[in-house]
Length: 181
Image (cartoon, rainbow, N blue to C red; front, top):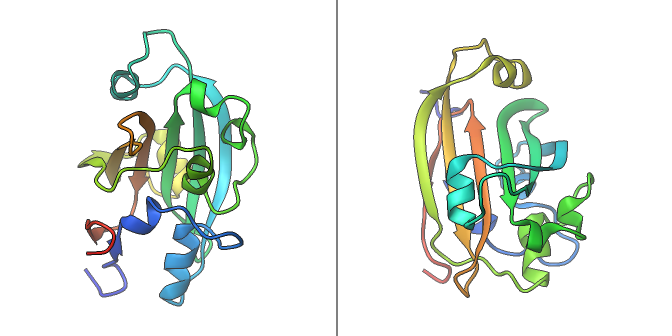
């Protein structure tokens, strides 16, 4: 692993609303390292979620939630597929359900709607092999090793508000700490 491959990150900026006019957390983090971070919106739709998402949100099989799919870029190269799921009662009729970028990111929009994320979400991280579609989108052969991070986020009032499933082609290190620590 080279120093360029190691990326020590802090999860807190991804959970904090951005001040008006600021870019999303990924773009800001990459810029702080002299790199270009970006995102390409792949899809926004209502779907029946995977079982873990359904259980976290407490929705019944067959119920739909809103999912936003994004391709995360570093210096214009794909490094991550991110799918963020939102309960329909939160997302319907908002920019979360629109196929366009959200200024400051979804966490900023959600905070403005009264859904401020708790400081300590549950995260599950594990290895996987890229399937054919993931490999094609990420520019790696099917079967290549990837890292899958699933973040389960509740609002400060305890309501489940977001599940993000991120499939990464890069090595990841980060610290999780409360704001003000």
